[in-house]
Length: 349
Image (cartoon, rainbow, N blue to C red):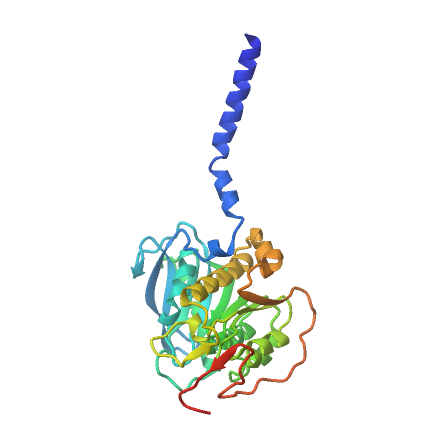
């Protein structure tokens, strides 16, 4: 009888321990992240509102702010339950709109980020001051610092001001490097098909960055071809640095617009949904690792998982002390085709 009593007590203790651990076990399992999981929405909804940002000279501009929310959509109620949240300043492409990148920006908001994107040159604006655009991207972060310090703001003490990142597409990708060059608050960069020959050149600015950089590119990019832009940026960057080339991906596939220059690959370009999913995963994983300190992503960011997806060819350097000395980029209106790509431009050479 005593033996049964001891057994019963032991069984009860094990059962109680299992019950106590139940809330913990699933969290640990889900932390073994996969690329597919990183492309899925996070626990929040994505809110969006236009905000007014003030420059150092007193002038203002409009920026789109994406944030974790309780419901989705314009001016949705902010959800601060998981704050403070890291923040990312984002730059749109030339002759483009912030909204073209909504898939990525909303996704980051659902994963627990503030994403703020300047609208300074939004739309059909052909004369762009890249240095000014980069400064506006930096001023967007200053806006969030101000909101974090303002007791009357919904974002009071909800911005993780020690965890700022920068991103962007095309021209905005180049501007994100210029912004990081001038703003020490930016701790890492992950951008999409970045332009190397901004004025001043991002390929020069990147040489002075002492922060981790991930460059996403498309092998069928007919606007900022890999060899003329992202490869040059990678060659001039310090470690830790990565160049992830999505096979059969296009320039406009990173930020789909209603009207674009046609880009085609022999055998067909990557499906838009696939390119968007990969973009979400590769950007989210990088920022989670460097801005949220998620060490469970080590394998995906720097380990075996980095080369596991045949759709993405990666150049990675975790520790080389000096950049490679390669020539500066020169703009070519009609770049030479890569091995499996054909480019068609309606405006000729």
